[in-house]
Length: 135
Image 1 (cartoon, rainbow, N blue to C red):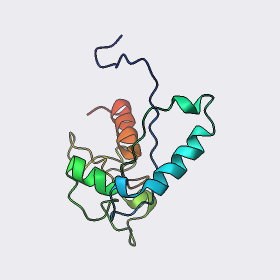
Image 2: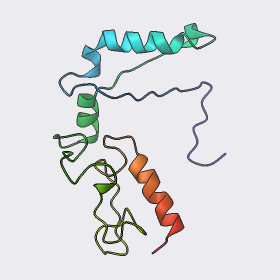
Image 3: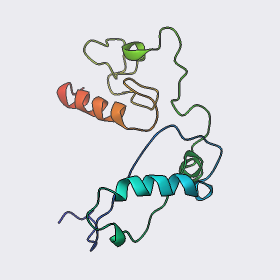
Image 4: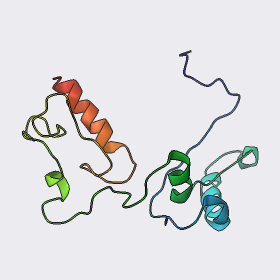
């Protein structure tokens, strides 16, 4: 077993979903937690085995990870910043996620193509580019 793996006698299920406001913490959204839990447990063979659940709202995540606030997508989508125009590369055909012409700097933040938010997709796609085109 790798040193970073957890050896626990149970399974964990983590869900991420979008479109929650930044105005309330998860413990104030009991109705949302109950609705999500009901939908998920309806697909589990032994729902009574669920020992614990916790809803973390964007406000909770902002507090926990010290997010500075502002636009979660880190960029306002205006003319010239939509879809694959949202990059900073001097050579987007070869190194889309490069930052300017700097050979050892890549940009893959939440405001990068193909999506905003904290999904991690830009980071994954940037890593794949770096594997294909090492500097």
